[in-house]
Length: 267
Image (tube, rainbow, N blue to C red):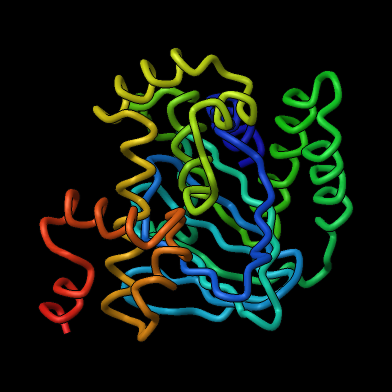
């Protein structure tokens, strides 16, 4: 089995390693999918993991594995915000006892991965020379630890449809679309030329990064209009719009009706 894991890991492609911290009291995430596998380790806080119409509680030292093309999201507690490390890795799928489940949730009972995760956080924050090489190796160690602790097997799969840079850009927008994002901000944060980003994103997703960001904001706003009693102004702010008037204009252009009319129609 060791040889099999080694062979599969050689074919694996690290898409990203990053940390997410829900600092806002009211955070509303949007259901989404990835063409690759995600492994999430909760460092602190409480919340829930939503997948396939079900909601599962998660807290510090819980590990979540999400296989490709599974619609999911996370919801953070306002009082105890979630803070987690997430690893995106392509060309592999987690399997347990020959059952191909969409996801797995379990606990790091020995807390043995905490020192590794602290090293990952330090590398992410300090961004010193060779950071990508270090993150690659640390991520591999974390994956092997996860495999060992729960008797997982790895299946090699091929997902060549989306480039690594395209996936990185999309993931960054998925994580930060509520913030004041521009092409210049994306370029600085991801260390990619903005014209290259437009080209590679359109090549992968048939859309520009900024149009995709607008779609994410509108999707989030639609969910909030249906599922909450927040005012239109509050929803505009939560979804990342700079003003209610701009939100109304963008919503009508993108959805074909005003936010208030949309709320009445769908409630």
